[in-house]
Amino acid sequence: MTRRLSSCVPLRLLPWLALLAPVVLLSSGCKSEAPSQSVYQMGERAVNGPISYVIVQTVWKTQLGEMFNLRSPQNRFLLVTLSATNGGGSDVALPFFTLEGSNGKEIKELENGDGVENWFGLLRTLKPAENHQGILLFDAPLTSYRLRLTDGGEPGTEKLVWVDIPLRIDTDTGVSVPTPGR
Image (cartoon, rainbow, N blue to C red):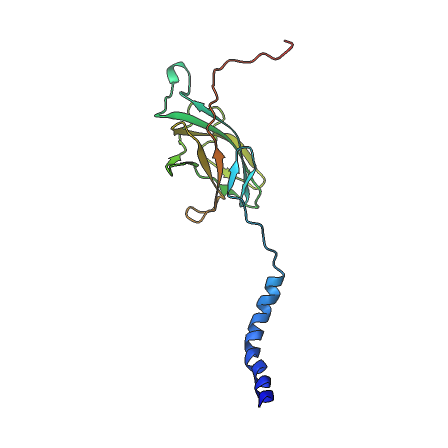
């Protein structure tokens, strides 16, 4: 009787083994990917999908423009120099960017770049292998932030990464520093 019972067990498991065999074979060929980084530091290459971003520098200003075309913020202007490269095979549209404060408050990028030389612009479509560098403009309280970066996907389905923007007070005096020996 023991013999008969043991010979029946493999027959009952045979359908399950037939279903599991392809799964085991397929999973053995898969390589587990290292989890992608979601928070980067300024100056690091932040990769999100086909797009690589680098925040080159940040500058705080109390006003923009000159003489009769002065522009004043509610808080302060934060100018973020950003480089974006499309490493994918199709065009990618970049939306306006968002800062996130430590308190969870979101600050949207300003859509008016008046007074900003090399403003990133309104139209933000990157062709394959295209690089674009420009300045993003925010009106924000003086503190540290994270810049939210998209992979270029549809709103609501896009993947996000962030770049820490620490508070650095750089004065913009407009004074040029002489080159040694001149």
